[in-house]
Image 1 (cartoon, one colour):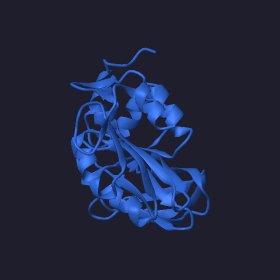
Image 2 (cartoon, one colour):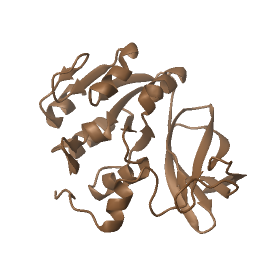
Image 3 (tube, one colour):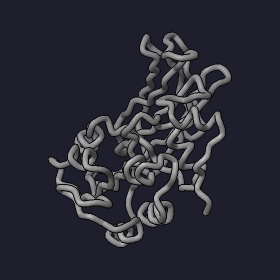
Length: 236
């Protein structure tokens, strides 16, 4: 399958933007535990910066759950209690602008496989080029375990999701790594790390949880694997 390396100008701008180049409202994916109340989040933006005082309507699985104004930091929040497991679809809408996201709802005790997009899926030194075999391997791993992708660099989650779509990956939950804060968050929710795939800084940030970690080069606290085909076999 042909990998997209050369982007149109619009997609190139979106790819290297930490936000969204073509949307004034941006939805956030999240990981939840069945029965808990979470805060759905939407970022509202002006031409270049966050914009407060914007009315945002929130939808879950096509049903409106209400509206809220964004604050001075350009963030609108809406509480929502997650009552079932699986994937629920979020939509946020402000005027004619809208965006979509995902709630991945799990049972307490579920074991998640985390994969960093930039260090795990990009060919090293070639942002935008997918590692051979990664798409097929992720699909197989995702059929066995909850799979969550990490946004760890300057490229925004929305732009990374566009890249995944253009490179014909399945749809996955994409959440910020935030220096490892995501691992603390899932631990508080009673969730476990089944495995972690990412560069040395990603692996180090989860060390206190002692996950099975994998990388494509020799690094402390991780098992070296040759390629994604080998990694897929390790996660049966």
